[in-house]
Image: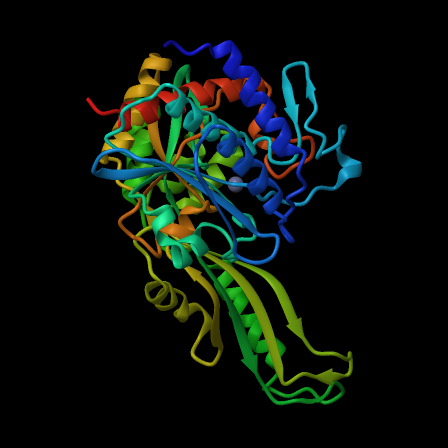
Length: 448
Ligand SMILES: [Zn+2]
């Protein structure tokens, strides 16, 4: 039986509106509201769902359609959202309003839209009676946005591994289109930088502010962060970035192509970045992706103007390029901070890179090519993270792809609203994604 996409549009729009109406701001999360709702939808459809709470209120829901012996595919989304400043919004951020074809609310782009689209795909697979070559798992989980938190898919892997035992995962992070000199592309996110958050601590001799001495912790710390902050750390390019730049370069005239390729040449990189036909934000993110980065963000020292403190601390947000580890990063920055300063690691999660040769990636390329024959898919890597950071350190073999297909309209720049005010998505984009994700899932999972 064919699918009536008109009915599907109404249905998936309704799911997204309902999900947007639950306030799942993290912290505290309260994702149980979404989990209970999704459990209800799945149960009504005759699909057995598993609901778990990692802590009171932190709800996760998973369900499975069983198939053959190929490694499973998981359709994964997080149901928590970042905080809002309601007075800066033109509409209720938890109202789920549908106005002129747009669905408004916190999470409309990050990522209740994909939670709804993946739910729809999952229900359609069941309704269409698709014979599967592998299990397909649906998972809507808590606690992605808090970064370090582990109440969602990471917790499920630790506590209910059988519910989420998938080698392949589709989640947020890529799928947005962009143009370069009239050529059209979609990203499929295969990589993300690692996180290495640390403190630099200087110790010195305490004393009175009226009698300066040479062992002042504040001065020592300042020197260290001054040197480190100004350092140009070496380039560490990765497969993903190479494939992205080459993929775009292959479609461009000689000059632009050369600039794109020169980005990976340490000596020519900076000039090449400036010559690229990209906006400033893209260029600055490329610059950050090429290397490990450090941003001093918090400082702590002293308690009185006339007392020299014995200790001074700087908090630094470090991000690691693919291929780097905590050890290689420490070795790289140590010369800038000197031996006297103590380095204390607060958070480490390694950089990640999925394989663009995997059958799931190839399926994404194929299906996207059918939906938009004039566009190419290129792999992408982000400076931030997705739930991949909770999965891959626990199960390094997992292929996590970020792919929520999305077409930007000229001058509209919807994607800039992620984590911002007035977050919204068009029903058109929701349907665009639902259809493509359905085709990707069928192509990848249908028994032939
Ligand atoms: Zn997200």
